[in-house]
Picture (cartoon, rainbow, N blue to C red):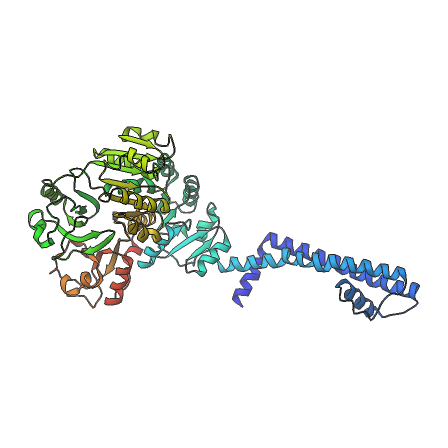
Length: 579
């Protein structure tokens, strides 16, 4: 009953709905007048032309049976003028009752009523007690990954959808969606933007600028994070009032460039937390190949701890007896000084070729080329569209214009001269194809690829890619880092940064006894107890009750952690205020 009342209330509150009802009523009045007129004419013709008398009810009965084409045949005219009148009533009934009436009913009542039902299913405002929520302005490729992360941390969110039908569909699929105009101040007032943790503007640069200005009217102090596609728009969005401008495509190119292991540089910093750095380094062409982790003496000689191993896109725990393969990429944690020691430890090994071939000269490819050139590497690029890479010609040692799927183009582009290929096109199918092709032409080349949709990660690994970085998790991690007040840790391959509270079942146990790593595969980066942080904890570190754990792993591993140890979701991120 409450649903019906709200539906009727919304239906009648719309100006267009009231106009539609008025138009439908006018037509019904017109139709009723025609029926009355035909009934009167029926009586007149029966008396004058036929000499017969019928009641008024019979006149209405005859008119409706003829107009609806039922034609029972119990009352008929015998004169020509009566039969001509019957034909007129029949034809006008077909038009007015069988064609016009259904159309008018659907157009002016039924369709608006269905729309009202949809609007009621997709709310236009949030509950009055909601605070600390995240407003997402568009359900794009980033939104599913971000929503998944927000749910894991018990942070409420709402997706703004202008199309009420699409908003209702999202709600039915379990997504918290609200309907409203993204450029209307009233929308953000109804969504309690003043009390939000963050507003995430994730549309085009021009629309994001409008959103930022509109949100600033409704909520002057709420933090706003906005995606930017064109680097020239960064200043405009900042002037509009965005606290955090995220050039994700440029960052994607730079992060891909940071995963490059060529030349003399072996260790690459890929993230940080506190005073600790997360680095990865290659085993390829080093003396570490074939050694067990305990035999490498990395901890004794550099102070760094190997916390995981990348194996063709999978992050596996660093067991002491794990034998390092040629294509393994160890993941280690240490201080800045320890990272320099690691570089010196690896510098005696044979360097890889310092040439990198980039396939694709879009925003991601150009950003990667600039970042690689700053490292002093030799950068080759293959781009199909002439003139697209003119702005970065100084960062390229060779630019080949042509189709990367053509063998001759790849050879001229420098495939055989390069130790690493970077795939940066925005088409997952193309990147998968090029992975297979490059692997076939040069089996020992290292391939790093960009991917747009997470569902294609397994496919591109099967195609031959060694490492993959996805656009959607990059955006989700960038926003979550803002929400949780930390630096982003971009791992790729579905590996994410998580925060959890030590469950009662593990309180007082050592890290080794807890079995967090052995049973779930999660890596404990730090333990926070009040204002004290134990970074890179040793296996004999005890877990205090209700301390905060900074974890690294996949969503599946985090779910296993909760199921095994009865751990609840972290509530700290929801109450943290960001600026």
